[in-house]
Image (cartoon, rainbow, N blue to C red; front, side, top):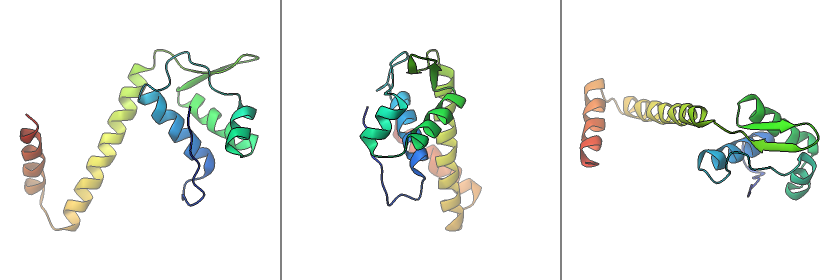
Length: 125
């Protein structure tokens, strides 16, 4: 598992950790049931506070991406295909929203935006 922390990022460190682990789970790089490094081990390897990595793991667990077993560690949650699909759909909606905002900033109307999307969809065939 590779995580890169950027000090120049506007995102807090725990959010960087959370999003990178989530991305690796969604990409299939971390498989269901795979054990994650301990909070302390991850903190040491990233040279951050254990509190920071605990916050990331807590967020991932609350979102259903990982499960923590007392005394054994944290593992990638199994059976989260629906969760992964919902997360990907949310990302697509966010990107489409950004595209719509950019189009409207240029003065494009709904019809022009729909025509652009239709053209792009047809070109993929």
